[in-house]
Image 1 (cartoon, rainbow, N blue to C red):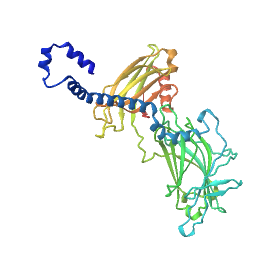
Image 2 (image 1 turned 180 degrees about the horizontal axis):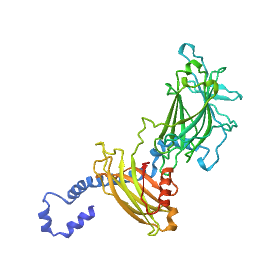
Image 3 (image 1 turned 60 degrees about the horizontal axis):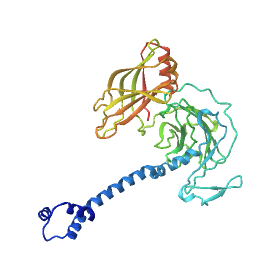
Image 4 (image 1 turned 90 degrees about the vertical axis):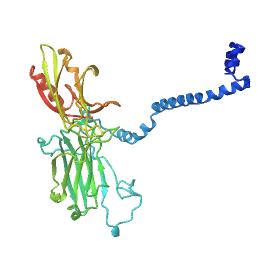
Length: 419
């Protein structure tokens, strides 16, 4: 800095320097004044560089994100079966909940207790004991599967009661025709179990990956429950779709008052899953029409309307529009979109789009239809998606096959939006 100022002073004549500077200031004083004036600019530049480097390192590290999903990752590693790609397992996992006695009659228990095999078993603070062992079994006497009465699927389970040990035994067998909750057209279901009104002590089955007809074949024991006490309890089963990086999605639930069950006969039940009243996963539905013209080798998609869309804005509404991606071999080829409907949760579009697709590429072609919420000051939000393809969810695949089987005829169908 001193050298630069000296060159500037040297380049000017004596008269120019006298007119620019007061006669009382020396060269050293002027250098100090210049350095003092540039100090805030240097500090500001250093602060900006530090902030940029900090944000860059934070985006690369992502330690906070991994910390929040650490528990979910551990649970996923414990999953031993990979869904429909493997045959159902005969391994039965037994889990036990102890009946909590009244305060005056409670028995003192240690933190460690030997089990029947002579090994030590940990007990939770509330007296809950979880133990597991392998057991061979099969469902040779299962009743025939009937068509479910609801579109959320059905679950099969059986119960028995041992009067000598006062133990209620619940056997979760399987579920059929569960809805696809994931964008890939499948679900990762598991079951949570409790005896209402006690919501504190819960047990759950293993996660069955990518399976809409899972077989669990797991046994759960409620020990020390007197028979007269069970008459005031309600068996509560809730089926979830496991999600590693976000909240698990509820699929459906079953309530069964035990006073209506004859436990002496060890009954087996098929129960329809009912919607969970407290679930907020309803994203809405989209009505889409497909028409295939084999001669022209093209597909016409008509986005007709949507209903019951989830409100994405703080005003309680959304500004929806629909975006369509043509995908071939998992690569996005062409994009088209509708107009935006302002402040509407039940928009009507009635807009058609034409896509040219050769016959030999139909089997590897799919359409990703996304309902978006348009925002002015930030990135547009995704309300939900639908994937129409030869291999997708049950309803999506049915729509695609019906389009192929009825050429030159529009085929319209409602589709539930997925995350």
